[in-house]
Length: 151
Image (cartoon, rainbow, N blue to C red; front, side, top):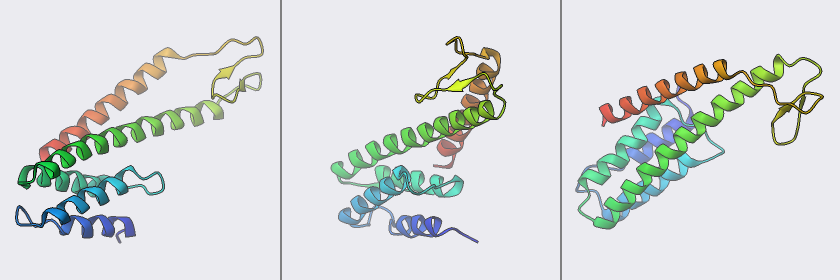
């Protein structure tokens, strides 16, 4: 069973039929995909993200219109930046939730998200954080490789 957003992205992408696709339609496809992928109100995952990236890349390769090529290229850059930023933010939120669930009662969270002890110090666990950062980087590299390999 597919989510509505997945069907929407598939419908948008199916409008691109190669170099013979009208240049105005190509531009609207690029704009629509950028809107969906960068939206803060909708989450797009896995195959649907790959389809959106692949379609923008195909428009970049196939379009004879320099404006559409440039727009597709800029859109790809922006999409990937947003995707990686969302991944990093999600990892940070998960880490903060884990920290919050294991906080002793003498720790406090101040409004900027920093943990403090009653004497004002900020507790750290550099080894755990470093290990999680390495895992996130490896995962991000694997996803980027899948994107590149699939295009």
